[in-house]
Length: 91
Image (tube, rainbow, N blue to C red; front, side):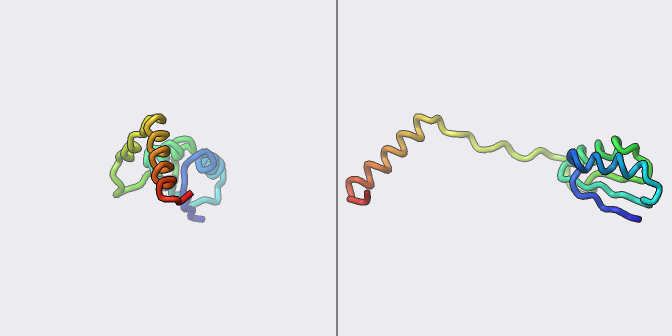
């Protein structure tokens, strides 16, 4: 039996460990967004006829989230919007 395992988190790693002990799996391919995690799941399963990674996908980290504004600035902006609405009778 050939298997494509999508997702190499905790459950995916457990699946590779179980599959490594079963004789009826011909091939298992492990795919994950993070190739290092897929390779770690393959290593946890013992290697063998299990392949992992994401060929063709560059190994990079996602960009950092945008900087957050200090809470004081958020409150000031909220007050300005409420003032604007009150002046125009929107509240």
